[in-house]
Length: 175
Image (cartoon, rainbow, N blue to C red; front, top):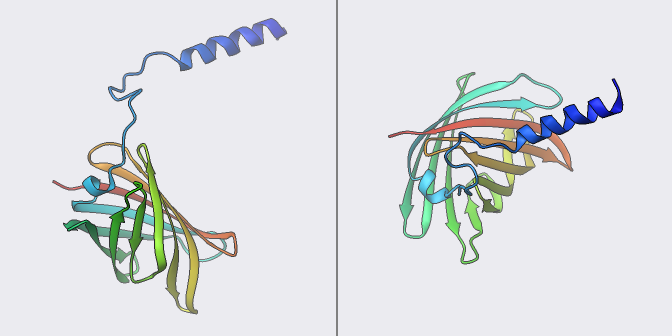
């Protein structure tokens, strides 16, 4: 194909990328709004994908968030496909600079995070109990809010800088 024809197709294709959007919120910056989204009841479905060994695990989570003064309390009830159950309670505060700080029983120290538009970022050290003992893993936790009901969460767990698992969670806010 002559060079000119290839460049013409490339430019026509790129021109189509900048056209009007059917999304009514296009061009507006959405905000994740942690306190608003996580207040009330939610249901979540997830997968744990180990990087090196072990089966993929599925789970569901029943969640409920409530305000206690300036703290968002988020109760998470996990049920795994193999029958294992787990409970985690987050206590989350927004700091004066807009950043987020949270704590949970299986988190060492504090989780630190921020919102950027429709995204939420948290970093923390998670103590994970396994058959061979307890592991302290670095958690890179990222959420993206699609609309008033739906959000997606991607959690990457690593040890000594090497990713050991990835967790994907779809969340739905309930009426």
